[in-house]
Length: 170
Ligand code: NI
Image 1 (cartoon, rainbow, N blue to C red):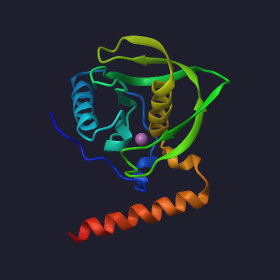
Image 2: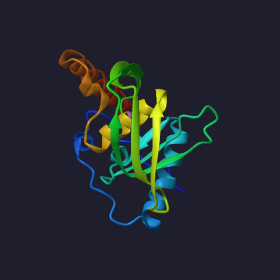
Image 3: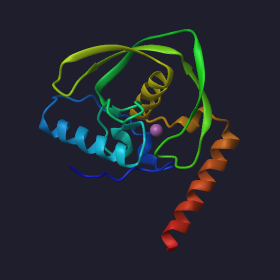
């Protein structure tokens, strides 16, 4: 097991589009374990492979209160979205310290492979629906701040670059 370094916005590698996983093998299962460990350590409720600079369609999510309900999504697709939307204040391990409201579908249906390469489908609402949509955006190279106004995005970039410079000084 290993903790993986998490890319920080505005790192251009966060905008790469992930490729589908060809074979769910031990290499992928090791990646999944390392991603889960990294997510729990952060701590966070979701992590996409893109955020650890692996550009394949792999996501880990755990929105449970006790961090004991890990969901592994390999090649996930949203196969249905409700017209109804919900607004949630989102954050992201790649955009530390920034939280803002994003509007997304309130309910979704997801089709995915699990760690054994078996096809699964599930319905999601509430925080899980938010999290799945947020992580699938990462796989498409999209970070949640891109839903915000250009002015806000520039402020966030400036703030995170400043934090990075200050971190380098110590
Ligand atoms: Ni994120």
